[in-house]
Structures are given as structure tokens and as C-alpha cells.
Image (cartoon, rainbow, N blue to C red; front, side, top):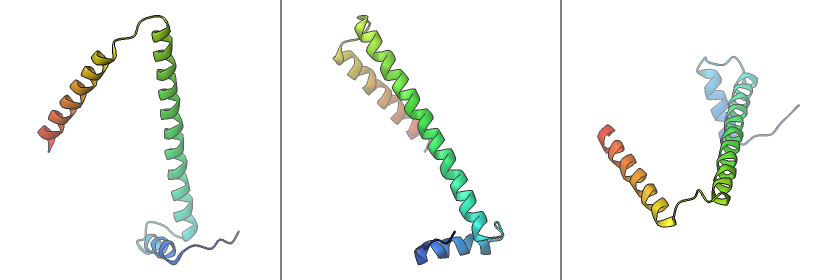
Amino acid sequence: MTITIKPELERKIADKVKSGRYASADEVVADALDVLDRVEAAERLREADISAKAKEGRAQAERGEGIPADMAVARLWDRIDRWRRERRETV
């Protein structure tokens, strides 16, 4: 297969080969595609997890197990504040 790529991308690939980490442009592209496959798989898992949580949330709401919106917002702000404090402590 022959592909056409932009000069900037060609330079990046050449730099990777010159670094000695890769023996050829094919190896650079293969590694990049492997990384892309892993990223896409992680995104699918994350989407499935979010979908499952949303489904469970709807089921809880239908069973009357929800919480008032003002309480949910307060909980979210508590989490945000806690995250900000933790972030400041580590910076």
C-alpha cells in the first residue's frame, strides 16, 4: 500500500526512526496504530460504563430512589471543592 502524508508527519516519523527506537517507518506507524487501538478500546469501555451508570440511575429514579436536585448539586460542589483542595496540596 502506498499512502501520501503531509511533510510535517513525514518528519515526525523520520525523527522517530532516527532516534533508534524504531527500525523503520512501518514500525512507527504500526506502534501508533496499536496505541490508537488501545485508546479506542478504553473509550468504548468508558462509554459502556457511563451508559450502565445512566441506565442504573434511570432505574433508581423510576423506583423513587432519586435525590432532590438541590441535594445532588450540593454533593457535586462538595466533590469539586474536595478535588480542588487535593489538587492544591499536590501542586
